[in-house]
Image 1: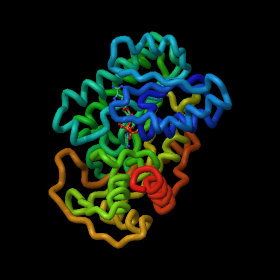
Image 2 (image 1 turned 30 degrees about the vertical axis):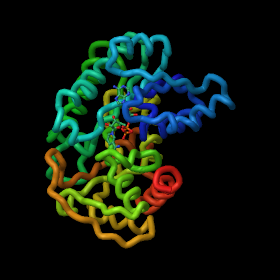
Image 3 (image 1 turned 135 degrees about the horizontal axis):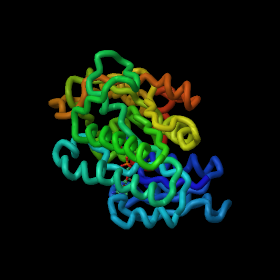
Image 4 (image 1 turned 45 degrees about the vertical axis):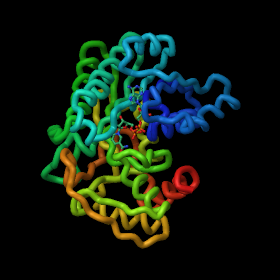
Amino acid sequence: MRVLVTGAAGFIGSNLVDRLLAAGHVVVGVDDLSRGRLENLAVARSANERRPGAFSFSQFDVTDPLFPELVSRAAPEVVCHLAAQIDVRVSVADPLLDARLNVLGTINVLEACRQGGVRKLVFTSSGGSIYGEPEQLPVAEDVPLDPHSPYAAAKAAGELYLGAYRAMYGLAYTSLALGNVYGPRQDPHGEAGVVAIFSTALLQGRATKIFGDGTATRDYVYVGDVVEAFVRATGQVGDGRRYNIGTGLQTSVTDLHGLVATAVGVTAEPTYADPRVGELQAIALDCAAAGRDLGWTPATDMPAGIAGTVDWIRGHVAG
Ligand SMILES: NC(=O)c1ccc[n+]([C@@H]2O[C@H](COP(=O)([O-])OP(=O)(O)OC[C@H]3O[C@@H](n4cnc5c(N)ncnc54)[C@H](O)[C@@H]3O)[C@@H](O)[C@H]2O)c1
């Protein structure tokens, strides 16, 4: 199958590209390299040596009016849309910027899919933010959306547009509402990605800071498991559906800090600072529907996933 991946040079996108190539698909990667890195695509580029034409890459902005032409030329059967502004705090500080990338960008991708005759769009939503503070955890997909930040609102808006394009043009879609994803290639220099941030700081012997009192919980899911869900969603299953992709488990920031410190092999106490606007107190995702329809379950527990992440950061970032 020909699959076009937006955000291909990013953390999750590049892991997805590698997984799709390993499964024998032909992959077209698109990224404007605003945050993504070409180094993340080194494995993908080497796939061309074994299978000429298996992977190609375009540095391109998904909000560009010419993006539909690029998609029509590439003629993918499926588009996996991961390109986005990913930071909740950036969305709070500059909601227009967030909407330009995450709402208008998604509409442009939908237009490109329509014009390019794409069969299916797999969308990247945010299970960690679109449900707000649900009364019951883990939260299932049928709970009404309750965005508490522009980032969450933009992801919810993207899902509404997916529904509209399905109704108008029969464009199939599956939305994957991800928990807090961690693993190799996550950028440790941004404000998002707390596993990468803690790992890098502790490996470098620097102090770590927790915003809030450390009791806030998240559903942490390993990137290798997340990209497996994407590969399954590119098939015929799950049209018109959102699936939560997490573990169902809550881990507090303080406990996460302890897990990372153990994997690094240090004992270190974090400092605490004021909580940040737009952040939730607790979330965990009920992923039974993904198990039932996609045959997907998370395979990596946190100690193993964090150990793999710390090893990667030791070799690539903090070494
Ligand atoms: N990391 C998480 O925990 C998490 C959780 C839920 C949802 N998501 C979603 O997953 C997707 C991927 O996130 P990630 O963590 O890999 O972040 P990332 O920043 O590593 O990847 C995003 C990629 O998109 C690219 N990009 C940004 N704007 C673009 C544009 N206008 N045109 C083309 N490319 C552009 C960036 O250069 C980057 O490579 C995003 O949609 C994000 O909202 C991530």
